[in-house]
Length: 100
Image (cartoon, rainbow, N blue to C red; front, side, top):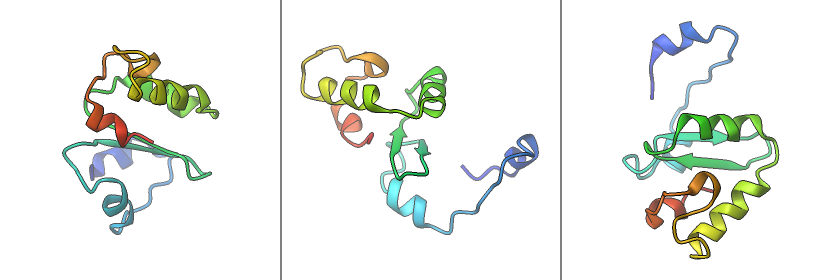
C-alpha cells in the first residue's frame, strides 16, 4: 500500500520507495497477498487479509521462524486438518502454499 500518511506516523522508520521489484516479485497475485515481512537474511512471509495482527507481531518480533515454518509444512501436508499454530483455521491451501 502506498500511503503517504504512514510516513508521518512512523517518523523514526526509514522508508524506501519500491520501483517495482518487490511488487513484481512478491505480489504477482495482488489479490492473494496483502503484506510482506522481509528479513535482512532473505527469509520472507506473505500474508493475506485473513492473517491476524497479533500473528504479524509474532513474525516481526521473532528472529527464528523455525516453528512457523514447521507449522506451515505440517498444515499443508494435512497432518493437522484444521491447521497448526498461526495457521490454525487457515484452510485455503492455495494461499498457504505461497506463504514462505
